[in-house]
Image (cartoon, rainbow, N blue to C red; front, side, top):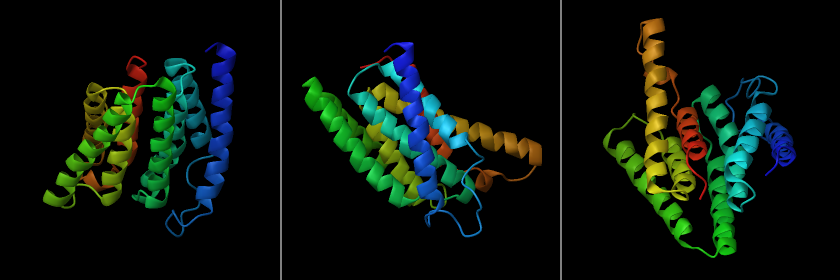
Length: 214
């Protein structure tokens, strides 16, 4: 894709994010009393940058729609989790269903079903991993983190198993660094002050953008 196409795709992301912010802000996803989801333009600019980066990295391939959709849903998810410590199922499940459909479309266009099989397997593996933590280490993470892990596994698995591992480890590493930093600054237990969701999203997109296109 040329520079104009990349910039145009980024503009589409900006517009979509603005509309989605309005929908989420007026919904019941946020805790009562939360005035706004994020500072003005933060969600929109973040989504636009991700759209442009994905277009540059992926090119004009059908999976670009899937990863752009992931950016559309995961940015507000991360913002909601940061503000409310909750990951709304009403955003995760529809996001996952649309993502499966878009990857299915990409597999059909590419005439290659293996990436889709690996994508679904990546989702199941991360659901099992986060599910084990959820059930055997109560309090370590919430049900929303479990579901988000499955959604990200779906996206990471499309590329490779190495990307699944890398994206997951980067997310946990980023969260650990944030906790250590807050403990050093506040000199208190900071575990509950740092939601996991935003860092899982960051790790996933770093892995996607750092991996060679399929």
